[in-house]
Amino acid sequence: MEATIVGEDDRGIGVRVIDNNSVQHTVSVGFDGDIQGHGQDGYPDKAANRTEENNEYVEQARKYARYYVYVERGYDTIPPAEHPERINAVRLAIQHLSDDEFDALFGDLYRQLRSYHDYDTERPIPEPPNASENVLYRQNVYLGINPLNTELAPEAEGIASVHGLDLSDGAILEESIDDLSATDVADWKAFADDLVALAEAKDVTLAEGVYIDAVSSLYATYLDNHGEQYTTEPETDPFDREPDTLLELPPIDPHSCETFREYLDHHLKCQIRDCFVRMGVHPPEAFRVLGNGRLEAVAAYKLLDMYPEYYDPEEETLLP
Image 1 (cartoon, rainbow, N blue to C red):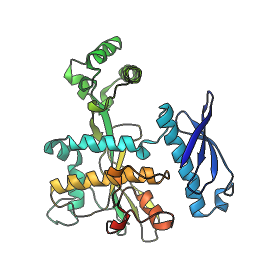
Image 2: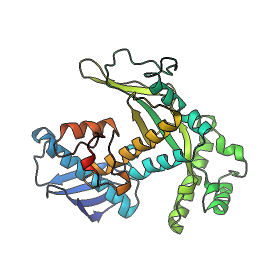
Image 3: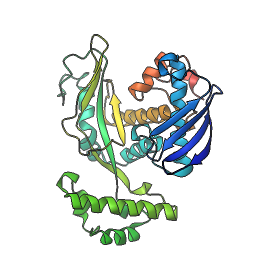
């Protein structure tokens, strides 16, 4: 994949992309990642008239255009669930959890999977009544940033005080968003915007302050006996925004909690691999792994001959 920025106005950025089929695309990407226009000269204009692989090349061009704008201009143009850096931030934050913290956040997911292999393990949520064997259990994961654990800690305290926030009060960082007033939420948003702007101006990363802020309760997506897909709703979900990562696991045997932590890390590596592969580029070497990432990617690997079978852990010839 090759890309070049060809223009920018008050609505977004134009990107010229050459896909892996040597077809040229011109993609208009809004500053929020919305695709405002897409022209290309190698496939039928209507999706219904394209082959499945042609449609995938078109989608690759769009995904790569969003990614290119993010890398080159820094705009937040990539949906969180498709953002390799954000998924990796979740992966690294999980590595820093203590065993007790990990159990508090992901223990239900562990026990849900374990219940399929150990009948003494209580299942946190019931299996969907109409699910066939193809059921996946999901959990939304949300990141937070503790500014006091970053290089900008002194400046962060000053910025916070301007917005009426006292970061020296540890309890303030533990407050649930549900307990905040609209004014409090606005103050936190203004503080976050100013902190990010300062980090960008000083070219400082906030990665050291990233932590797992919250997770949703478990829910499921599944196929019924007729092949129709259904998705349940989590009983609790702490934020009214897209999660930073969506975990999506089949009821494999997780064995011990330690083994499950390793498996979860591998699952997130597979998700990161999928982000790059489905935008038409080779993933970084650390993420050239085999196994299940997201359901949508696994389906693409199975249905389209253009993709190797990355979901199959036995396909070791695909590894470098």
